[in-house]
Amino acid sequence: NGIKVVSQPMSMVKFYNNKIGFFMGLQQTVNFDYLTVKYLDNKARVLTQGDVVYHTDFNSPEGWEDYSDEKSNNTVSSGVLNFRRKATENSVSHLTRNFNIDLSRNFSIETSVARISGNSNNAYGISFGQKDVYNENRFGISANGFYILNYVIDNNLLYGFPWTETPLIKQTE
Image (cartoon, rainbow, N blue to C red):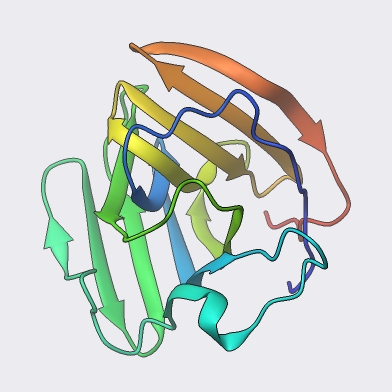
């Protein structure tokens, strides 16, 4: 809805590599409208055109090609990445890709997402610094107005901050 939900120093974050993308738990369908990765100027926090590392509005696949298996499927069409998780077991589905990011610089990851269907208290959002599903960082939101930051380190789930309610997330049924 065009409003920043949270900004957080990432002291616990471990970047295993430059993979950034999306994750989703349990049975849900969501639409991502864009993905932007930008460097931040350490002094004034002013963005310049040269600071954009990556941007897509999903008007073409650009490395986010259609995919389907028994757990999930995604399609890129008409400016939307539609991500659907079919699996019912307690695990997470991912769509990630590698980016050429200088990890010594501060940067932001931004997206816009709308939940289409599924349970309103399940997480979906951004996965970053992912080595594999056993080592990654996740910032997630839920359709009932909560957000969470967690880390998976050697398949152990740790919390940067727990589920936190905010009026900044547009709630849907």
